[in-house]
Length: 430
Image (cartoon, rainbow, N blue to C red; front, side, top):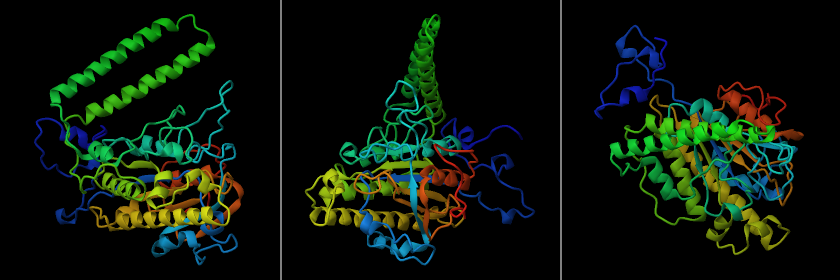
């Protein structure tokens, strides 16, 4: 069969769920013995975790001369010691066009030149997570999911609504409350099906009317106005795509939550921990396969009883500010170690772990203080086919997008380039 079949086609209808035969068109192979059936390979997933104001360069980065697989962990990475063979630290990368010392996330996943569009002082391009989502997000309820913190503006992230930017370089909105994320993923819809169908139909009707009016005024416009209108039309097409996805999943129940509902009002360390739990739950239930998290900085410090602002801590010098910066680094490492613990402990249908199928990146566009070179980068998980367990020091100013391109290829997404990439990193390929 050549037709495109997926689980949505079979799960719709009367609401009754029945077991399906192992259809070859859905990825099942025929075996000589019925007893020899094997579950399909788990899908690949991607997670990007971004923090704003960078790290403490004296104690976070391993010694640049101590490279390879037998390197010594730095004090800032010591809480990750139990996972040393399962993550790689990369030094030497940067985004060549970055020029804003307070923007730790805006161009982190895009590598874009903010001045690339004549007449504009702020342009961006598609982020690597959205490149992955376009390939891996077709079969899940949410093509991707963006998580934020409530204090993103105070934490050195820069412009944007999340870490994600769409194919037009426009910001993609995210959720800034763990309870909101939980309900989006797992809570049943309150409105009856008929009312939700009517609401979607109304949205489509409004879109049709807007599109008709926009096309009517298109005649006689200048080239500049036509370019703006083309961008507007692309925005409408994006909305239509999202509406189509909503319609596909309208009558399919959400997955059962594998965790308890978070308490309201979580901040700082507790907020990060619960967001990490929600990331695991979302991937485990295949609600989405692509997630980003723009993490808190200010509230993390407050939860550690640090009264200094995240910005002032980033301007550390020996003394109290530097101690706060180092404590923040260790807190991040401990939380990341906990996330890896959970990914390893979560089992797939074939007996492997969720960790084996996730490509995970942790880092920032700002290295330390307000420097934009040597972006702190940790890579983990088996989903991107990377060579883990090493300390990799690349030539100065290697495009960070080379890392993202290598991850994309490792996930089977064979694009020629991403952002300002100049090629894949063979020393990183598994």
